[in-house]
Image 1 (cartoon, rainbow, N blue to C red):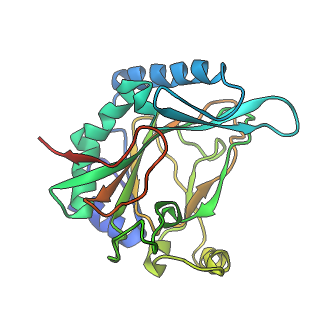
Image 2: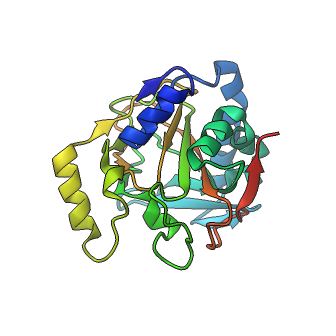
Length: 256
C-alpha cells in the first residue's frame, strides 16, 4: 500500500486495498508555493464571520466548542482564490494515475479542496464513503461500474502522523460496494468491526489515492503541528450531473 512511485504494483495495491500511498512526490521546494497559498486562505478566512463564498471559493468554517472562535474545515475549489492550488491537479504525478484508475483518456475534475487541521481546532470527519457525497445511486451520478467512476487524490503539505488526525481508512472495505439506504451506517460499522482501521502515515509531498467506496475518515489533530492536505477529485467523463459549490463545475482534464 506504500510505494515510491506510481507503477503497475501500486495500481494492483490500489485495486486490492482500495487506496495507495505514493511517497514524497513533491519536493520541499515545490511545496512552498502551496503552503504559502494555504497561508493566504487562512488570512482570508479570518475576515469571515461564517461559512461563505469568496472569489469563487467556498470557505467552510466550523465553530470550536461552545466559544466564539471558528476553524477552517475546508475551502472548496480553493484554486479559484489561490491559482497555485490548481496546478497539482494538472500534474502528471496526480493526473496520470487518476486517468489509469478511471481507464480513460480524459476525466472531469469535480473537487479542488484545501483541508486544514490546526492544533486544537477539533476538525474531524466521521467514517464514510465518498460515494455518498458524489450522490451515487441517484440521477446525479450516472456510473454504476464496480469502481464507482471516481478517484480522489490527497497531497500532504505537512507530515501526516499518528497524532495529528491522519487519514483513517478501512483496507478492503471498497469491495463491499456502495452502502446505500437507511441502514448504510449500520452496514458501515459492521464492515469496520470486521476489517479494522489503518492510519495512513506519510511525509510531506506524498500522494494518496482512493476510490469512492473506500470507508475512510479522520480524527482531530492532537499534536502541536498543523496537518494540511490538498484534495483533487476526478470523475469518469460525463458521469456527474451535480452542481458543486465554488467554481468547480466538472472541468475536463487530460494529459498533454
